[in-house]
Length: 501
Length: 73
Image (cartoon, rainbow over all chains, first blue to last red; front, side):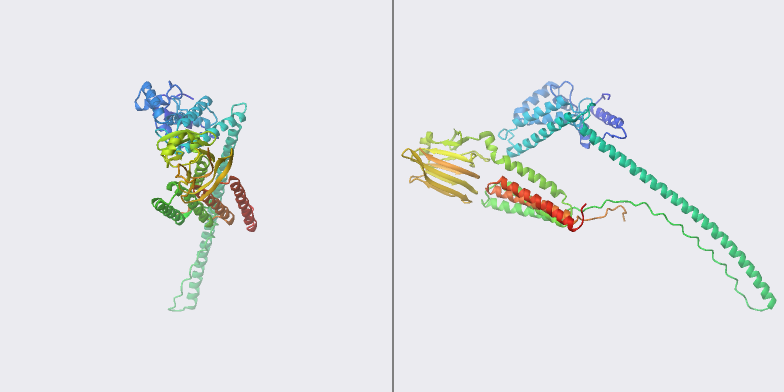
């Protein structure tokens, strides 16, 4: 394949033309509209790049020299928390090089550029590692979700690459791809057969039309002949009648002239039936009623949740609650569409999106804190970090703080910074001797089993056990003094053991 | 009047039940998410059992309807 030259737009169009020209009839080389759109951007990866030449190509497109472009790119890495690295990897994968080749497109066609794919994978992983939800562009759990999806895509890509390498034959062609191409060839044969069938049908139709024309002509000739004979008979009858009239001398009687016999109607040639035009039946979509019902329900649920949040009656983020309710709404819409025998249409897509998104959220969401600050507790005011090992919070070194700050909370940073969460399901909190403890369920439902033990004669005995389960804010106080340690737990199931030493 | 208008057909009973079961599964998942947000702990093993049961009902329902309607295609 010749390397096109000239400006990027021309190169791209050259490549497209060439791709069309190089396509064989049995294996047309189509290009997805996406890649055509990418080529139309006019950005080609540079040939002097350090890695993929993306910065050089983008810089060239916007009129920036290589060196300042690279410096700018390096500057963007810390600012964007690694996002620019992910963007670089994506651009490396989808931007064409100077010869018009696109890495991901070639991968899809079974001619992968393995070093480039490895480089893209490494860069993506590095970039995702850098995308922190605590950086200037904190993405929260959404960032982690995107990271997970992209990570999964990378894993799938690597597996596909391995599968391609395992299944490739002596010609370097993957049998999988060959099978796909075999399917294409079968499809082409089927199309050819259909074309032949259509051609045959056309021939039959033309033959039938010709036969009909011949029959019509013959009938026409026969009709003409019969009409001629009829007219001759009429003439003879007329002459005979005149002779008779003259013979009997009948006056003033005008005999009606014999009517000419009508020419017989030629037989109608049979009309050949038109070839059947098959139209695939259409299953209607969910319909306006179901769509509007779902939309109305979405708004109503949103209004209800908004009101609950406004009244401080909602223990979770209203948007999260709305997204959860939307699963039910979409599910009901699917049931209604199914009952009506209709397609579920876009509801299927939204159900998949919501289910996948929530699955990821449920599996990794509550543990986001663990990923970064799994065992860092700190006092809210003043903020003091307490490193915790094995889920044990040792508060004995905070005698003064506990004495002075009777309402100080031992908190774990949550999503809003000060909402409280016990990340370790089995947490032991050690408090100084004599300290009273108040346990509070921060808000929302709490399922926690709290054991409070006191050292007695050298043995730990259970002093009090409390199960908190419910939705209200509840306090449980041990000891007669005013509370000196207040443990606040937000959500989830936890076994909290408070030991007094 | 266009002669190329595709005829409209509705799904048969088997497909309807399948779709409705799919919707039911989506609703069940949504209720599970709401429960999770309310603080209830997830018993993944139980969820797996329920998922298998739903799958079984799904397949059995579709098979029964297919037998009733003699539509084994």
